[in-house]
Image (cartoon, rainbow, N blue to C red; front, side, top):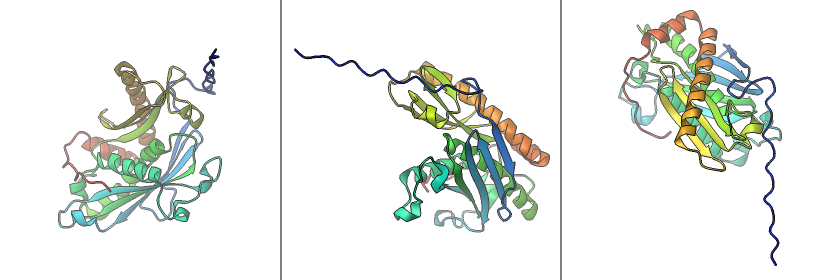
Length: 273
C-alpha cells in the first residue's frame, strides 16, 4: 500500500514593517553626488541604494554616425558586498553576467523612451548605475535615479549648446509590484520578492504610457484582472516616485520638462546594445 505524502505547507509571507501593501518604502534621492559627472543621483528606496551617474561622450555608436542623432545607453553593476554574501565582480569572471546585461539594456531602452535623440545631436549619454546595497528593486530604482542624473546632464548640455529646449519629452520612473501570499504589494523587498507568487517590474512615463512590463508567474499563473490590479498599483507608486523627482530637481529643470511633455519625438533606431 502506497503511503501518500502531504504537500509541505508554504511559509507565511513576510510581514511588512511600518507600511501597507500598496505603500512605497521610504524614498530619498540626492542630486549632484559626483564631482566629475555631468549629472548624478543617489537613490535610496528602503535599504536599496543605487548610485547613478550621467556622462556625456562626444561621439555615437557606428550605426548612428552621420545621422545627426544621439544615443542614450547604460551600464549596471552590483558592488561585491551590496548583497548578503559577497558577489564577485564581473571582471573577475572574465565576462559580464547575463543579468547585468539584461538590466542595463532595460535601463537604456527606458530612458531613450523619453529623450528626443534627434535634438541631442551626435553625442552619447552614458548612465552608469552601481548598486551599493541591494534589498530588492535595484533595476527599478536604477531607472528612477538615472532619470534624475540624465535630466541634470541634459540641462547642463542645454546651457553649453544653446538649445532652445530640453530634449526630454516626459518624466520616467519604475517600480516593482507583485502578489505575495495572495496580496497585491507594491515595491517588493528582497524577502518578499523571493517568495512572491507573481513578480512584475513596471516602467512608465508621466502620461501613464507603459515603456516596459516584466511580469512573471513564479508559481500559479495570474489572470488579466490581477494584471490590471498590479498595473494600477504600480502606476500609483510611480506617480509618487515622480513627485520625489520633481522635488529634488531644480525648478527650472522641472519647468523645462513640463513644457515638453507630450510632444512627439523621432522613434529611436530599433537595435540591441
